[in-house]
Image (cartoon, rainbow, N blue to C red; front, side, top):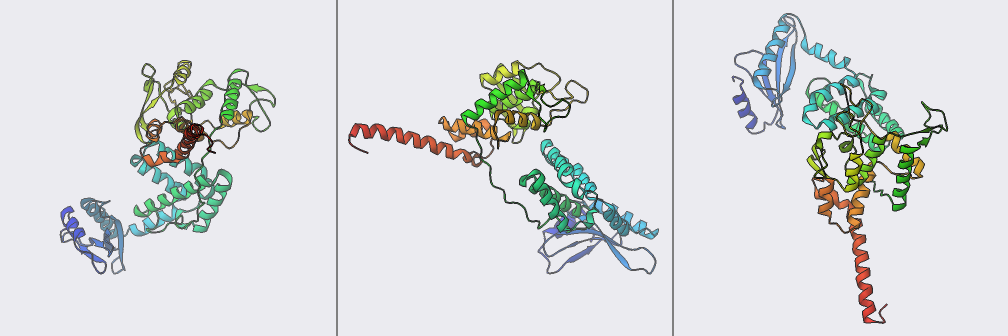
Length: 411
């Protein structure tokens, strides 16, 4: 057939073949595509690198990923190079063998970045840099074994937790799947597939009233007289010396507690997204898309008390410079606050859970809480249903007590 977009589409829509079916182009000898029994179509080029030599077939790309005219041009080049004695199939194989895991991850993140949110793409980059590359980054991508990935998973699990280890394997698996489709590793080769992962249990931790008071006192001390440096955190200051914490760090923690916003939503918040007159934050690109965050009076007062330095409300080290970036995290100040408050087992994200549980405990409906948190799926908010159950228990006890008292003698 004459291989065009139309003829290929027609062939792909036909009944599945009983065995792999090959279609060759009428105009360009050696150019074609085949369709497997599962319906997958692949463009290819056939050629001999030397006269009388064995015929070789070079996969050019999947039907759907590669257009017919693009495949034709790739086949023309491959066949022309073969006539000059250049073996592109061998060159491609050598290229695969030479690519490291670090390079594969780099290519994957670069060329798929536009298909996901910027924050998600940045997260993939961080996972690769921190949890994958230090362990197997220098290994040739085509030579990595499942056992090596399993060992990496175990090391990351011990060092950074089960969740981080599982996400590392997930990202690596996706990178290999992409690399196989685009010729960076042999198609179907994926050493991250089949790796045993940790079982993840949803974490439900909420601050008690006493813990919130302790954290509030610790933040006040941190931003006024400072917290004493101990041996575990001493780096730029002598042990015992008090170091005053940045007011932007404590402001970020308070804003998360008061609004239920996500960490990145506060750290990436720009001044032009703040509407103090209406008491809202207009986030253009949160995890669930555009979002309004409603501010209680206490949160409005906190923002009013911050001095603008650069574009971001929570000023980071590069605030006000040409290469300004939002603050990366709150790990160190949060750890110091928790230590001073004597509170353990609380993540920054648990502040969001606490916000929600208090709302439910005050008899606000789950739909209202879901809207405040920016949940796109009502099922996500149902994790706080236990708090609603407690409200109902208190309510029925109060009602039942009054009725029992009226009836007299009922126990």
